[in-house]
Amino acid sequence: MSTTTTVTQPITLTEGAVVQINRLMKEKSVPEGYGLRIGVKGGGCSGFSYLLGFDDKSEKDEEYEINGIKVYMEKAHGIYLLGMEIDWLEGLSNRGFTFKNPNATESCGCGTSFSA
Image 1 (cartoon, helix red, strand yellow):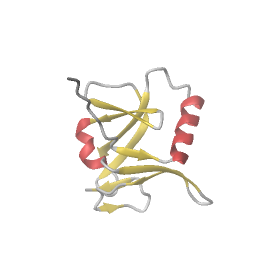
Image 2: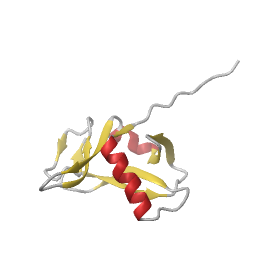
Image 3: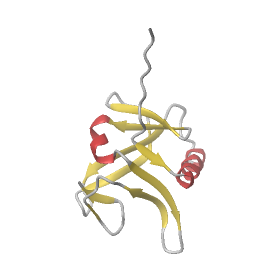
Image 4: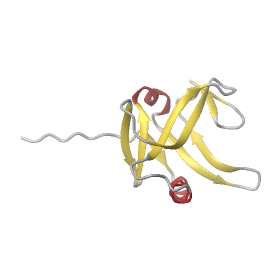
């Protein structure tokens, strides 16, 4: 008898975010084996700030494949990020990644920090 384990992806990347992440990986010549690191750190005007960058996998990480992108996230960060959507905004006054986090009880005006 075989068993199958299904792992639900903790976050969603929109089509616009995927395009920009792939563009950045190519432009920055991200090394083979690196993935997109998504996490949180203390600080920011609301208590936590989002981490988004390219990194090698560490032993603390869970690994996911989301829309063809290898994603690394520390297990402990999951409670803050579960269900979050990362999008790319291309506007006249703002341009960059946006974070829609259902776990955030407050968010700052810049959209890059939150409290939970």
